[in-house]
Length: 259
Image 1: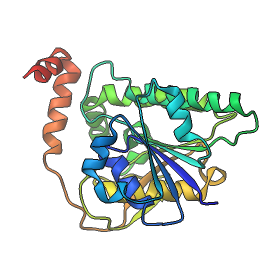
Image 2: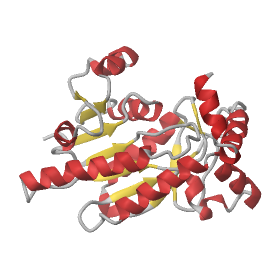
Image 3: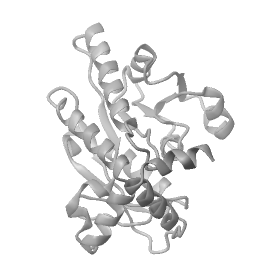
């Protein structure tokens, strides 16, 4: 029987990158959980035509559909996220709680059901030791620029770690991400590097899933590029400035939203 993987947030850039990496191996069955099946079919028509992909359409509140998506999988990629420093952000927490609710439903239906390994997209900014190669003020600046996102990720990780007596999780903490080709990656628990391509991040997350919970359970792991020519995205400076303004003046975020 082919191994099964579930991808949550399959219409996002990270999610689509994971689908792309997984689909290069024909003996893997893939479950994609999305809010809009039509959106995924429009953005990834080639991937959606492949027989190993099954699409589950629903919201995170639809625990029944989510549980069907997770059923029988060996690993679940939690790739739902936001890029804007949204005040009171709770996307990561909502995703984590929905997944645990779905797994509880599966366990209620079958007490012997095998629980999948959760591969959770997070950020290197949550891990001080990954920033040892950078000046401390740079780490502090990045944290302040996206603090609402990071607090959300921290609380989601805390919640999932509380469930680790019955569900294993690995927290993937990359540096800044860019759209670039897949150029090679390595896994590290000691350092991060900015920038990293979405495809290399996806390849690292799939490597963790393939290795299994016995290797990476409870770990915080960064994916770092092995190539020296990864693209630099200078527009990231604007996102940091905007994030800082939202940090110190939260009302500005809602003003920009209405513009």
